[in-house]
Image 1 (cartoon, one colour):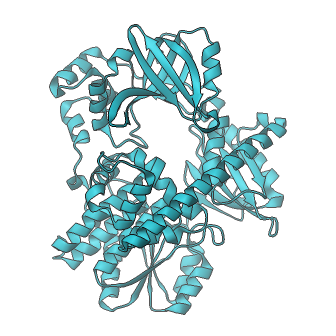
Image 2 (cartoon, rainbow, N blue to C red; image 1 turned 30 degrees about the horizontal axis):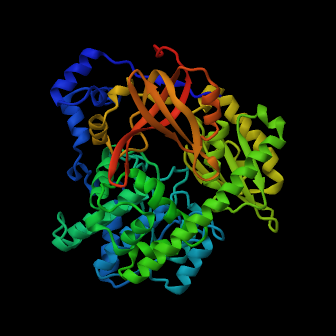
Image 3 (cartoon, rainbow, N blue to C red; image 1 turned 90 degrees about the vertical axis):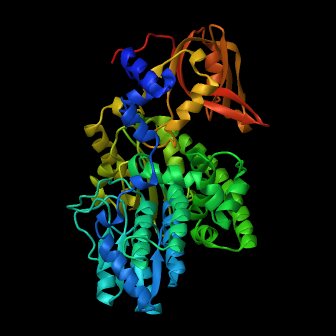
Length: 585
């Protein structure tokens, strides 16, 4: 189903006023107004967010008790174990707290469950093993645990002190841990509920540093540590795709700005293998498309501990070795992904009866459980339907599934409506995971699809394309794009500005580029202005554009391409259709 374009309507008088008040281009003024920043005062506060805008960690539910318990454990020389997660958010959360406790002189280690053997979150076998090794240790979960009711009960039974810090969606019953730290606990008055695990971990580290200082301010040494910890929190925040507004915007803005100066040896080695120009300003895209995937590859392929070691090591030689290894793992992951995506599309085509379904559920015993989440996202985008891909274990007949939503569908609610068919599950609105017996897959597909169909019409399953303004290609200048970058870092709830332009024609035939002709390269022309546009993974558009008589309406993100020291204005083509007047809704 074609994407639905939604245009923002603009009062040109207000646009002109904001242009004059802020001395900015109409492009930036229109985007600011479209996103709820209609005055120079409000817009300026958003653009110039500061680290001082971060909320006091003491406001975070459970943080005071957790920090006090950690300080007591440090004084008593107890071992402190950080129980992390195998994704980027979990890795950075673990590393933030590890660095803090190490600097505080603590005896600290970490436990990262194997994605392939243990699955997500705290598990009872790990609790028993950790207790047996050291029954006096303090265990702190990061980026997981808020649904670990059984596991917390076991820790209590064994007498193992457990602090749970998390940000994920809660269930009706909360775990009876020693302390729970979560921005959205029942009764919470915390001003911002969308911190990721690394954000929560950073807040706990901050509170610990305050107590190690004078109670309000950290020592000079620990303040320097907190500055470097912001870099890790920024990477976790971007990778976990939480809203880049409020505190998250401040963390990411200053974390990216500090990467060159404050990054650890491991992080610097990873940036080097990514091929990111160290002389440029880092962007959220650098994390989302280069740094994050390489860290995630380790977790997806069962070696998350190596990624945490990379983020915590001070040994430059070891950092280089680990960064090179993670780079190779990422290449392997990409190969596996392409194979699974190809097979998933084939399976859908082999089942035409699924066309009437409002969701896709596919199981296969030849898939790698560590990468199906990424592929599920691609399948959901391709078919405009919420999707679960399940990697079945042929021996146990139990499958691990990863799901991604489409459009406005609440994936977690739809999954929970079928909970009686599952061996286990968890997640949030956009992404969820499950365990299921092979015998229940067909019934889950039917019930899951039926629930989605009952709650959402087809239009709600298509990703809307929100257009900040309709402009002329001549408006998209180098200076205007530089101004637009003031709105960054871009991400969830603060996306890159999107514009539309009509009466556009091909300057020359569209072509494909890249390995396997996967991508599109096209030159558009409007009046006297000509601009190059690219569209990733949209090579099939070349033939369609060339067969079309035109003119076109195009939607795009403007960008500046840097190549061999030269910069030029380009467009990232998001969608196109026959020319039509801008919508009035």
